[in-house]
Image (cartoon, rainbow, N blue to C red; front, side, top):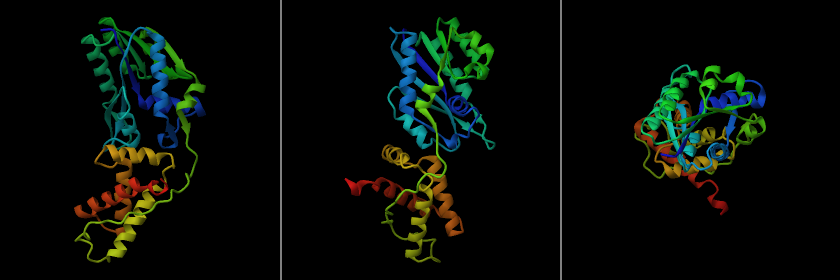
Amino acid sequence: MKRHAIFVDAGYVFAQGSVSLLGLKTPRTQLKLDEAEIILQLKSLALGQSTDVPLLRIYWYDGARNGPTIDHLALANMQDVKLRLGSINSVGEQKEVDSLLVTDLIDLARNQSICDATVVTADSDVRVAVQIAQTFGVRVHLVGLEPSRVSQSSSLRQEADTVHEIAKADVSKFLRVLPSGPPKIAVDFVKPVTAQPKASVSKSEKTIDQIMEEAVQKTLSPSASEDIPRLKAALETSSGIPMEYDRRLLGTCRTLLQRDLTGDERRTMRSVFRGTVLALGTSEK
C-alpha cells in the first residue's frame, strides 16, 4: 500500500537538538519543544520525499517513569500522531524505546502498510530494522539534526535509501532553551468542597486549606506561563494529572504536612489542584 510513516526518536530530537543550538547536550528540563512546529516540519519533509504518497501517521517514541507527561499528552492529542512510550529506569536511562520503533517499522513493512518510512534517530540498533523493511520494498529516509553526520551511526546512514538534515535555523523553530527562573504564576486557590480528611485530626480545617494552597502554589511556580494552557488542556482531556505535576504536588504536600498522605488526602489534594488549574483565567473572560 502506498503510504508514508514517520518514526521519531524523541530522545535524539532533544539531545541532538540541544547540540545543534548550543554546541553541547543539555538536560531536557532546560529545553522547550514546539510540538506543532516539529510535526509540521516532518510532514513537509515526508511530502518532499514522496509527493504522491499520503501520510499514514507519525509515531513518536519516548520514555516515561510513571505515565505520560504534559508534553506527552500534548502530542498524544494531536492529529496524525501516535505516542509510543517505553520506560525510564532509576538512573534515567530509556528502556524499550528503541525496540518499539524497530518493531513498528518491521511490522508495518511486513504487512505492506507503508512504502516509505522517514526515521528520525541516530541509533545504530535501528539499522537491522531498516534492512528488514527494505526487503519488503520500503524505502527508508533517515533524518538527522545539524550536525547530523557526527551524531548518527555511519552504518545506519549507509543503510538508508536517502539521508536528510534539518538545519540549525529550522531546529530553532521547534526547540528552544528555557530561561532560568520562570516568573511565578498568580493562582487563585480553589478550596476543597469535600469533607475534612479524617486523618488530619491534628490540624484545623483552616490549616489544612493553607497547606493545600501552598502545595498548589509551589507545584505551579516552576512552570512557565505558556505551560498553563497545555496543563489545562491535559486536565480537560484526562481524569488524571500529568506525571511530573502529580509527583511534585504530592511530594510538596507530604513535606508540608511532615507525614505521608492518606488515600483521602491524596484524592482531595488532586481534586483541589485540578479545580485550581481549570479555574485559571476564567475570571478574565
